[in-house]
Image 1 (cartoon, rainbow, N blue to C red):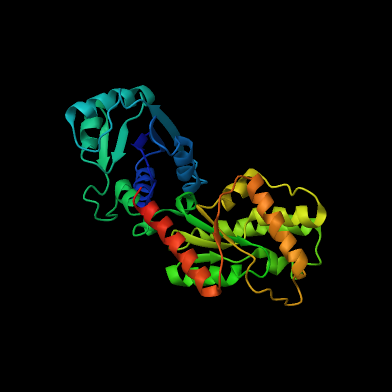
Image 2: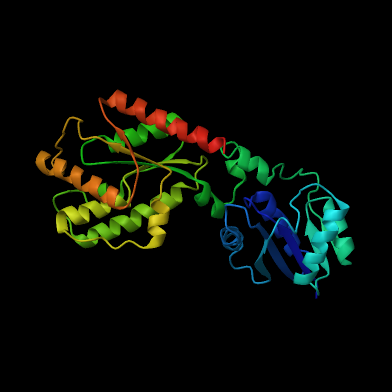
Length: 330
């Protein structure tokens, strides 16, 4: 029985890694993937492990393990080094004493395997198939987004939530920003599931929260990491409190999917427009207060957007551009 392993930081896991693992699976009877997690890195090993397991869901001849290590004892380097390779080979031998094959896409794979006394099979050493590395992706997420598998994209997606009470231009601004940045967007699920703001049940709001989360999750798979979201779960919770005086139960997964990198709150100084399905102006302004209270209670910091429609777009675009720059220079 041929037992093989691959190792890496997978920070992040990308399509080059995916191809290497797929290749490795064809060369052995059982494959172990070792996620090497430095104790100073900000993305937990469990998250990276989940990326790989999700991508290869259903693969029975494979496992994913985590090696959490101290970089003062095990050196961090991607350069080929005899000394470093020997140190890591000793560590790998502890975890894989009965394995007979190592597969890597790095020149130091021969050294590590040699010290372990096992065979090494290289994969795409010249990066001809996948001219990418995790560091390149980290340095320019936008230009290299297409190298991320679906399981990874939701973690790195840049989400902007457009919030506010009724008739403040949320949908219009969402579509304007999406067009401006050539990115995906999510329209308010409630407008489809609850056509009339004056006629719905508490259970309808639960359906809205679930459906909206599904749409956000799907939008993160788009060709651009930026996603503009019309309304979020806090606004749905506010409706529950405002209309029914009840707290809307929301599980952690839905909260995590809704979590945004930037919240823009549209002031209710916009002209009120009654299309026959909205609250009256008095209730609309009371709902604005409810929204702000819910956001405050959940410690959501937002940037307030006000003025005429053009001013709103300019203010919002300025904030989104700053977010993109900050994300790109981390």
